[in-house]
Image (cartoon, rainbow, N blue to C red):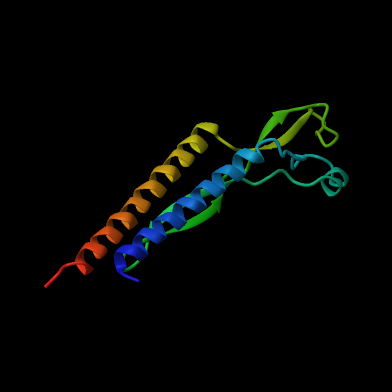
Length: 136
């Protein structure tokens, strides 16, 4: 595969991972759990809050890009929900630290990156077809 195609494929792969991470964050925004100040029995009985992912796109040697996913820091924020069975003595629960504005940006960026790399692949294909169709 040519370097042009491999770079475009790496961009499409990174865009797909970006979208997957962001969609997972949005889908799990309500997956809260006990706080670190909750009793040990409560923490053992209920699952921890979802840990959101943060996407980073880095260049690779020789061209292209790759995705690096890390955990958001801090992973959770306190939210008041005294009706939750795992709420601490103050009525707080640990809610995933998901910023909807950032997630919308990540999803739009993934879309535009995917489209741009697909366009590069289409133009490359046309260019190669035109090159091979040259009559001597």
